[in-house]
Image 1 (cartoon, rainbow, N blue to C red):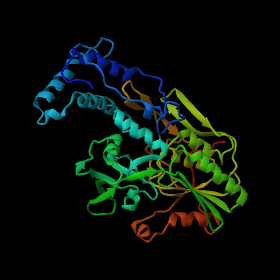
Image 2 (tube, rainbow, N blue to C red; image 1 turned 90 degrees about the vertical axis):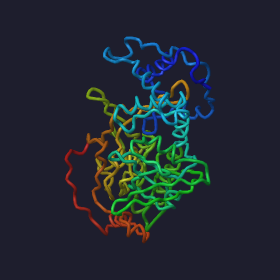
Image 3 (tube, helix red, strand yellow; image 1 turned 180 degrees about the horizontal axis):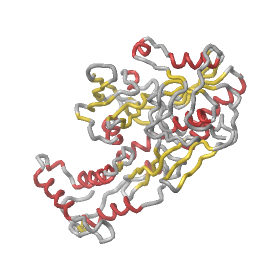
Image 4 (cartoon, rainbow, N blue to C red; image 1 turned 90 degrees about the horizontal axis):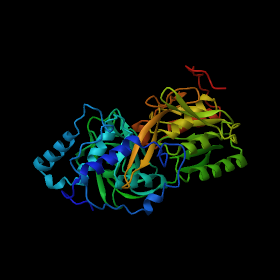
Length: 433
């Protein structure tokens, strides 16, 4: 462990980490919303994070090249010392706590909710998300209009069973305000051992006052694909684009080809995203060739992700269901199928999470996630903050929810079975060739 107030060099160690944060350019893994995966993913759980030695160069000034000429870096240590000396609960301010807090502040200075520093504990939890197994309440959350918001309660998990819904605003967690809380910090507070409770104060649109909901944590095992046949139509529900998604989706595609249904409903409601490459693979079952999604890095660089050429479902009439809980990778799929006119989009405007993050593991097992690009649909529309607009707008209100009605699914069935013909929707952009 790092010893408090010993050694002669906090600054050099601190500055080395700062330099890593500023200068590291090659990430070992693409992050929750990135293209590709890396062998390093999963290795973290086999690493033992050690904190050894003393902090050195405690009061040394940074090299001239490290910061601007008008920055007095000794101000950092002045604030550090005043907190240690004056804060009412100064015994709780360990050096490690202050140090990691400073790094979180560096990342938050970008003003982007998806650019964050994660300490080793939070990073380990983040990594577990994509393995599909962790202990918590089973809900994806994000920042919407600077408010901590439920993107998607996972099917049959504690959050959904407790009545939490997509779009709910989380005001407090166990009585503590969520104002200015990052997504990763909120996730860390909400998660906990199986069988324990977390109290969430929820504000819901259309309800006059906030409600406190107690959720009993459980082991969360995410099965990302479920498929069933309804009225001769195959309904494929993808709750996230995780490690198990592609194999399960391929199995559903094989069943569709054998059964030859009247059409396919791809249900991406409350799907918070996942691996970009998996999303491209899924979209490629309808799109034979061409760009599925582009990553725009500033004004000069654009990376295009092309269809895989399989397109086994291209001849099946398809409807994609989306809502305000559909985000990130699910928006890529919906946007691509809409642009290529491979499907009608039914439901509500999607969340609008269309940015790309890289994730760099740092020397002590912590990590830095940085927004580096934005996603564009094949026609060039930005997904970020805008989202994907449905061709047929269908709400699902509280009365429907309480009565176990699903007007969005019903409308999708009507479209495929010819019981409803959507009006043509004029697009502001041309359809890609």
